[in-house]
Image 1 (cartoon, rainbow, N blue to C red):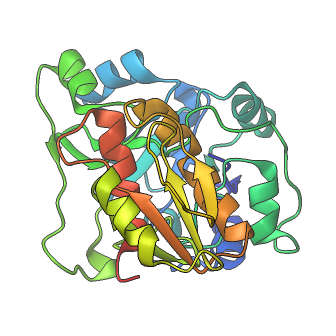
Image 2 (cartoon, helix red, strand yellow):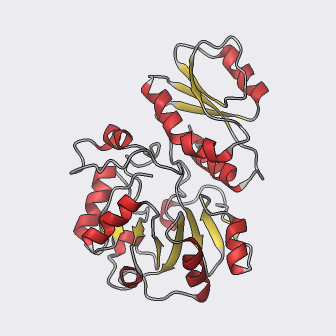
Length: 301
């Protein structure tokens, strides 16, 4: 995922992230570090469980919610006591952090709530003229955001590249999956990336449960204004509207990798209505991450 970075220890710099993204200040940011010294500048303590998880998954797609130190501006965490921290596994991102010699606050490089960017071109679609520069490192390899975990409460707030099974294997404890109790006031959200509507295209997003339902919806849809995310092993006979070939339905890693690029491709094609299959609940971890993103993208659409 492409990120919009600023010095995490400089409140003025961090405010620039919120302005560029039109991001509300109640939504906290994730801080990216390159080594333990940098981690110590934003976190005041680490539990044994947190240290085991770092050893197992850093660098990698795991964000840990840890007690923030007083040096970290409150704007980064929306005045909460826990800060999300991760060590990315992108060589380019790590090189930038090391060159800066600073922890970098870096949410996704898009307008708030919009589909996340997986290429430099996606960043410019949203933020051209609002940021200073884009470092093009090619398409993202994973496609969905990091897992966000409270290692002391053992709660996953956002599912991603590290699964609950992976975490249990390291800690010996199965984490719970966070479930919001109905509509939650933004100020009470405990983690980045869990706003009710997020990752959303500008087009109306309609989710379907099966190949049969996809076909039935497209039978009555307007092909001039409708696009479909269609798994390569599914058929949509007679459909003449826009299609994004989404990989095999059984290959969750490919579905995750091309989810955002597919939604953006259909959006760029000018459609007003996107029809997309929703992986079933209880599927494998990466499919669950795709399901989570789609449910948020379609929320209150």
